[in-house]
Image 1 (cartoon, rainbow, N blue to C red):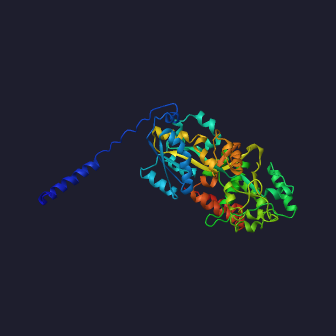
Image 2: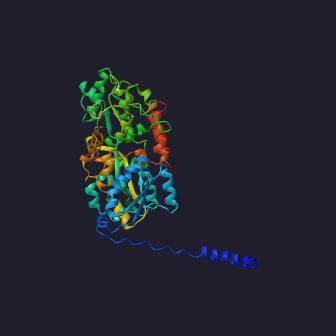
Image 3: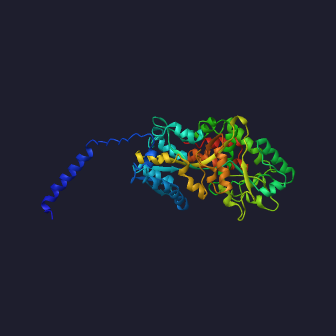
Length: 448
């Protein structure tokens, strides 16, 4: 045991040494250089990165986490790279803590590009265009996916990630057997859609099932509708500016989109329960009257997840079907509103590059597609992979789209996208505030 008479001077020396260490200039270790190869994915399949580990995190938990692990298992076996995925139900909070604390995973799966954009602005994300060439990306993705992955970094725009799993929102559901028995036909244009809506009203029914109540998230289905109309009535450039605040809500473009939406929503002959019921009807309950005998409404716009709210025992393709929400202005083609998962890279090593390149291929999501619940945005994916007509139909719409854009409210800061936008649409639809007032109030929610 140390003699007590030496304790004080020794402790002083230790403290003095610690002070010198703290004050000494810190020398950063040089970043490891990654060996350049033509394709890191090809090198991985040759076994060059065997017995390496790539850490991942994202929002997939429970069954979805199992499906993700299953879909990358063949790649892991073929390459010897161990993709260690850890999902979190509090992903938005946990990823910020990890990145800010210097403990970023190699790859993170972002379901909201707006959150990823924050890390890109801070220079935390690796530019994938530094190791995956443009030809590889343009060969396998609609240009819109690449546009949405391009984000502003501290030294200019970078390719911030690659898209792996997606889903479509531009879908209109209808009770197929009754629809056909009534003599109705699927509309190809917006004018056809309005004509069908009027025809159903003349037949004594209401065409649309609409509900936007969702607890503290009330209003989000209305934001989806406005985003759909924006994509069909103005340019992609204006849509992108709108989601970043460069194009104000109180602009002619947004007002025009709202007025177009109001032609349907604010006509009590067109909406089941009338305008007054829209705000009070739970979004998951709103399509159910389509399946009454006879149907009380005939069409419902929502993403493919809505089938989980349909009455039990219904068969896709027989009891219900869906069609693409038609274009409005031919100048803007056939856009599709989407959501999805963009994979971003925080640490630069050869095996991480290989995994990112793997995510640009349809094979990276094939097993999940085959098990149901996932749509591939990759051109090298096959419609034959899909085991149900709904997923296959959604995939076909997305792959054939002229353009795609992400859910606008998810791109906006939370103060707007999940704040003043949700509330403003609710106030406008309920009639508690007029459109001009609402649009100004939404704009006021943008952070400085």
